[in-house]
Length: 191
Ligand code: AP5
Ligand code: MG
Image 1 (tube, rainbow, N blue to C red):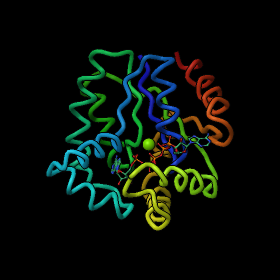
Image 2 (tube, rainbow, N blue to C red):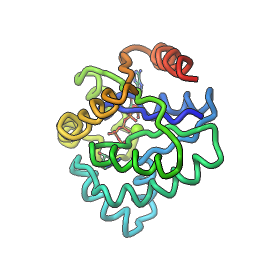
Image 3 (cartoon, rainbow, N blue to C red):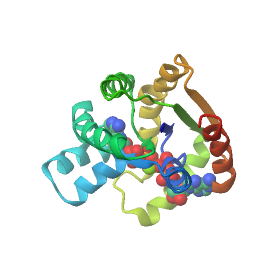
Image 4 (cartoon, protein in one colour):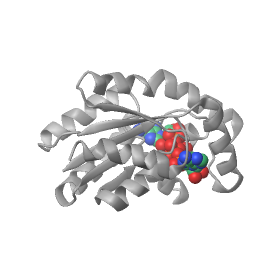
């Protein structure tokens, strides 16, 4: 069983690469961003509250994420080849909560894959996507805030997994296929 975390700054390609990983390795994709956007589209109470954070480029509260995710992880690790976590954990408190949850389920995170992309390229990708995505956070002001939040809150999650020897940095610049080739090499070494 492969339980992978895909991590990196906004626009680094987490969603794009997750789709390819799902196709090749048969993992279940759990994206906290996608789960929240579904709630926003449905105008649920949770979605309305989440949108007020997301549109400003801030993280939504940990309790909200853990509620949504604990159930999904429990279900998916029962019945699949493993999971790919995209956009979670997003800070050290979430990483600690994930470890507790995995221990309870008698499962383990295999590796955190960290996609490294230059800021200039990230902004370019997100502005292009913003022309059609309809996402409330794909505008220059919110993108800049998301990048700041990434550095202050999410980047420390890498150290958490480095300390456990479960960390792989991947060059996230280049074509989608080139990057997927690099990711596949890391995954193959863990199977
Ligand atoms: P989330 O949905 O996780 O967004 P994000 O981290 O900002 O990342 P994106 O989804 O924008 O980018 P991506 O890395 O998936 O890249 P993609 O493949 O799409 O989170 C959104 C918000 O929700 C957060 O800000 C927060 O408020 C909240 N949230 C989510 N999880 C949370 C949590 N755990 N705790 C608290 N709050 C949470 O690619 C980007 C674009 O580039 C696409 O158009 C793609 O086609 C293109 N592209 C991809 N690869 C390449 C390439 N190699 N070359 C050229 N273009 C490329
Ligand atoms: Mg994404």
